[in-house]
Amino acid sequence: MTPAIVTLLVLAVVALLFVTEAIPLPATALGGAIALGLLGIIPAKTVWSGLSNSTVVLFAGMFVIGASMFHTGLAQRLGEMVVRKTGKSEVGLMLGTMFIAAGLSSVASNTGMTAALMPVILGICVVSNTPASRQMMPLAFAAGLGGIITLVGTPPNIIASGVLETAGFKPFGFFEFAWIGIPLTIVGILYMVFVGRRLLPKVEISADVEIDLEAAEEATATSADPRKQAITAAILLGVVVVMGLNVEWLPLEMAAVIGAILCIVTGCLTEREAYRGIDWTTIFLFAGMLPIAAAMEKSGAGKLIADLVIGVLGENPSPIFITATLFAISAGLTQFMSNTASTALLAPIGLSIAVGIGASPYAVLMAIAVAASCAFATPVGTPPNTLVLGPGGYRFMDYVKVGTPLVVLCFIVSVIIIPVVWPFFPGK
Image (cartoon, rainbow, N blue to C red; front, side):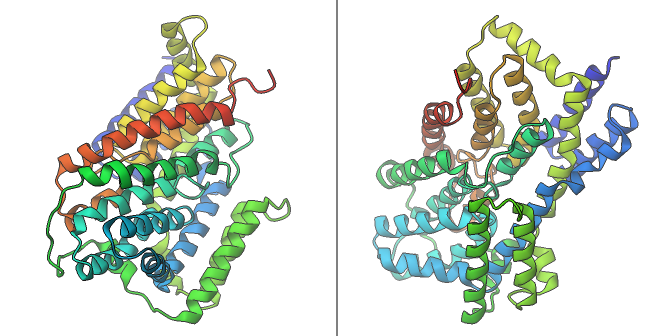
């Protein structure tokens, strides 16, 4: 068999394991990279190249800074301040919840942020006599939308950028995702306030409802020290400003690590808390998929898929049609499997297809990453959805009813905006 066929067979096994999650996702990704190394498709040093990738370091640093926000109580305090300003009416509470959730999720773990804000919102729901089912799903959806706004907001963004860099293209900038992330967040909030709110169930949940999810317990066990909160806020602001300015002598990953170190040396969180704050699943999954992406390019597997797709679509396939199709596939996969895994699976394929038709790959990769964050139609699509399932008293069909229209809206907005911001044929 040719190297391309061997690579595709390994990729097929990886895809199957991603969907079934028969073994942990990081083990699947690393196992696929190791298999390709043992089969001689990529050199042994390439198998582990993902672990030394600067993006992995960037992710780890931001995870630690995010953990400091939760452990010091900064996330909860910000949530309380915003919700207090917007009032306790159902619409006011929803607006406050979604704005603060989206904002915090743009620079911190959307899972940790959801866990940190849940007790705050639940408490206000009890005081205002508002069913928690009217606020929990908006909280989770806003967390998913807010993650799209920056490079570090959600794993799919990092993976798409990493695949570009691995293929020799300039990676996405830190705030580049905001061009599509902010419009989608605004559309999502407006949808929930004017349409989604009417589709939400009214389930009465007692004040002592058990929100026993490890992340929630961990996030609410904070120090609530104003000094540490101020220090964490200053560190976060400094890191985001540096990243936004794109200072040449201070790369993104270095800024993130410096911020993480400052969080520890200033006592905002302990070394153990910092380690626990890192999402190691994301780190190793990303590190394992980069060598697989490199193998697809080196073996010609990516080109083989691209040629096949192009052959089916005709001699001059429409880039917008390809982008829309890959968005739909990515959005479909992410409802039932990890958004990180779906992006890792589709990004190399999308890159190859774009290059195959002579188009810029940026729009295609952006569409795949954004779609992977649109996991609104099931309770298992993303951790925040699962976190609010119990506290909101939701059923599976509640997510389908409220989330599906939002996915469709995101599809429409993305297909309109993405090709404008990232042209398929720049300069023509």
